[in-house]
Image 1 (cartoon, one colour):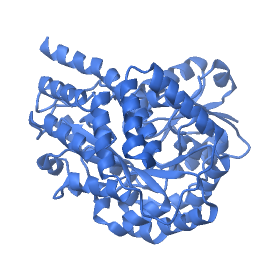
Image 2 (cartoon, rainbow, N blue to C red):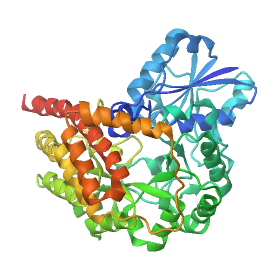
Image 3 (tube, one colour):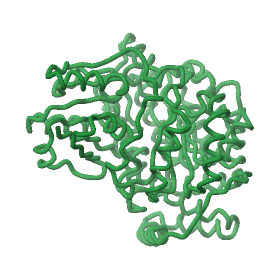
Length: 506
């Protein structure tokens, strides 16, 4: 049996980091971990190829070779996934599809032959058994959650890590919180389920031996969703492993702002090698946080929490949202003030969306406020906003005008260095000279310091760092690339926002 695993292309959003990738000479941000894990569950005697459309083109000879195409996608990849489905249908290749895009609305994809939904650890074995018997069903879905202790080691041999900006693992699935705009609990439940220490370290060892990454993302919905097991099991194991093998990479992850409430947990994470964290801050408006059930962000000084995390040694990327029902026209300037004062290097601002399967989606549908067709960029929404389209999109344009330009980003990065401190930890990250890093640096100088229209701020940031914060020059270079990424995304967003404003005015 010949199996072609296909990962659709990511559109040009912040998460794709396409402008950053061009500067550092990489093809995609991260490998398709879900498909690599599914590949490990297939029979050993089957032949497999993995085509990541963010890295390679899908060729006709790929489809001619394949008996089945296994397709996995998130909602944001729908456009590319539809193109893959159409090509497979024309080529007469059967499709097996899974992932969050298909889980809640599989009936929108009539071109797919078999849906293997929810978590593959449960549904894939049943499909494989039926396939062997010659009677596979159209749909496989369950209402239970998988035991991730059974999850196999992903097939890293199917990809080339040189193509990717960073590597990826997943320790837990699920989140204890019930934010009404988030589909995590609908997909994976409220009780975080965790792999064993041995599973994670085996995955890290596979990546370490490849020697081709400086950063590994723990792609958890909320890494600190189960603080007890994190403190008692994973973090101590990672610390001991790091002391023993001295890997040359840091960790990044996604978590909630209440990490700032737990000094012990912060220190353990820093000792384990975590440096970059994505935090869903969402809004400074308390009423909007309560209304959206983001209660873990309430009754706290968000700015003070951000400063505390940065002062401990974390580099924060922050998620922000406008378009809540409780928002007023003042929210846009309030968001600007919070973002600029926070020093968060990479703020990702979205207009509120209601993903299928969420409480918000059901409410919008019941209220007749759900739009059927919409895109997935930061400026898109599938909701008819209470604040009104014109106010929302004019305010969103004002917001991004004041945070994503090189000048605004430069000022915010200066603010970051006012609060950031090196982590106080005895567990050091090993570093060694690599020729490829020198070549990347020279490429950065050429593209950002010479050719870029925002080169003034590249040199201002590096010059300021040399004079005022010489020990942070490496971060200044990284943040200069982030300025380039933010400005590139800003240019991509503006036409979409202007189109929405003109459409409403007409």
